[in-house]
Length: 442
Image (cartoon, rainbow, N blue to C red):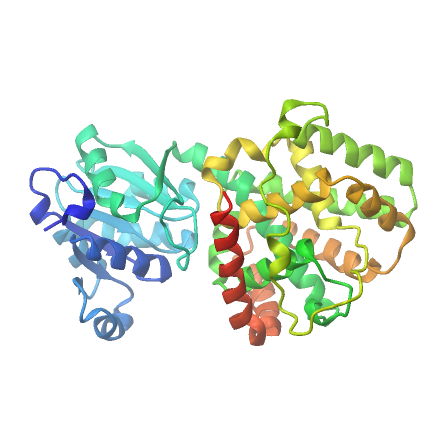
């Protein structure tokens, strides 16, 4: 029976069964939170994982079943928590077994293939209410955005889903499937592409950047390094699905690669006036004029919050080497070219996006810092090798997305993941602390 932690219930809530198909990291997170709130949970994953899951959840209020047919037949509300690339196949297999009058949803990061799968394979008497927790499985869901999508459902069914998920303590955001995919493309796809490209660049140059003396020191560099490692410490399909299967993401990732290449060419060719004109025009479109009311808004990152975190055990006493921050310049140029105003999507922002936007804002709004970055881009060749590899990597990811190459993505990701793997433990712990500090400063 649902406990009082769900605040309000509905008639029959004591017998309401929630089914989870897919017990990866996010599926397990949902299972733990929902069962702790008192809801009856039935869950499954691939049948070869049955014994492992029984052992893991044996002491919890989660009943592990052998397959999705059994979960679908027994559950009133079924959540598919599988890879976006697999959602069509999994729903095709288990969807026809869905209980009469049940509610079905998914929590994939890309809703286009998910909704198409539901429409194609679910019985017509089933309601469809999807969701997406906009954070990773190791982030506390409290106060994080939770997208709810009433695609094909009665008001009563939608209210039941709201009641069930209330125990996460998240902030509900109500969108259509297409709105969800556009916003996640704007806020996540390009952000991920930037960090993926950083990792490939450092890997290509055989660098652990936090061990490079004064080359990568300071608040902006801390965010770059920690969040790059955080992404590569996760599963490859999380980012591949969002980029490749989200039709809204393709143009963003392609434009990021183009912005990176064109800005790098301006630096290589010493075209200082063109570089400055282009970057300042992008700055005005994204952040507003310095005399506008938007400019006076409180910055996302309070001064010094990210300077507290570093992976380098030996503190540096000498000043950090100036960097042109090509990745940040390209990000703002990309947003400008596509007419994206990132602040419009803050209600759906992930902690990672808030950090990335915060350091980008810091570069563009701190007096003198942007001009220094542009000067370094033209005059200083210290980061040329890194910038070259970053540009190549950004184009490589864009081509992979354009060709919808899941296997190529997996291989590109895996080889760099192995390179950085020995450093993941400290990076993930530090990334958690960094995100916690930023969220507490909101």
